[in-house]
Image 1 (cartoon, rainbow, N blue to C red):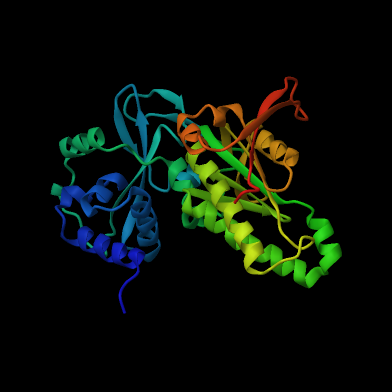
Image 2: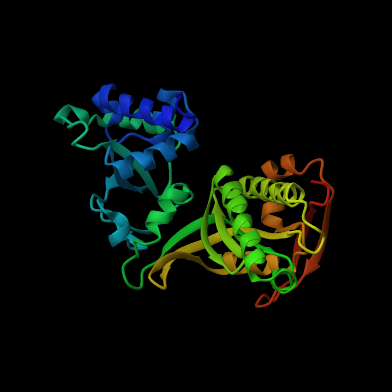
Length: 341
């Protein structure tokens, strides 16, 4: 039986960790490893997370100080994180952003491959940092398996961590209450449960992670606006295909509505779990409430993204102004209709 692509990548990663030069796998950047393995960065990051769970690699949290231009390694940082960080080298105090000052690197676990003193080659690491973009904690948190693990690792009491720019995605089913009333709880529940599988898959395929479910809806976070829009297209298409495959009558068909907004957010501990909080999250949720079935609504920061423009270039887009609860000024909302999928 041939291996799946994921299994083949896992094997290639383990071989690389065992046989590559020590300096190449000591505090290695995920994109550096992806380049060596000739694999996609996202797939490599997901493989590294799985390797961490298996005990093959150790995750390092590294915080960058722009004053002394040095990455400081902080063991078990998430459990002891503080939004204000004091550099132990130069004493500078600064706010930590999960999509900027903090990157993640990986090394072989000592039980897999012990490191010698020669593994630390700072000149080589500086060369790699110039060649490959860092993998931020925000990006790591959009890997679903890591998100599922980290959400049960609460921050210190009263602490929060900032993200300069997160793309937040809310979805819900149109008329789900009527769906239960018309079809009975068992059938409606099974339809909704299967819909969750489709949405989770769409989010995961497009470099996002589901943060939580709420009734018949979900909240997800993505590393980019374009990924969130791609996930919306995948989700609507999958749900329309789901309706056709099951030959659901009009009163039983599921219709998805999605709202997307991008901006700053904070990571906090709510109800003993990691969660995202702030105005960006509130706006995304309220935009979703404006949507009708088979619609994706999104805001100007998303629409203005050139990568989003490339995706929706052939799609008819409508816009309107709306005042959202809790906001003084109205916003321009863009509507992407999915009736043709």
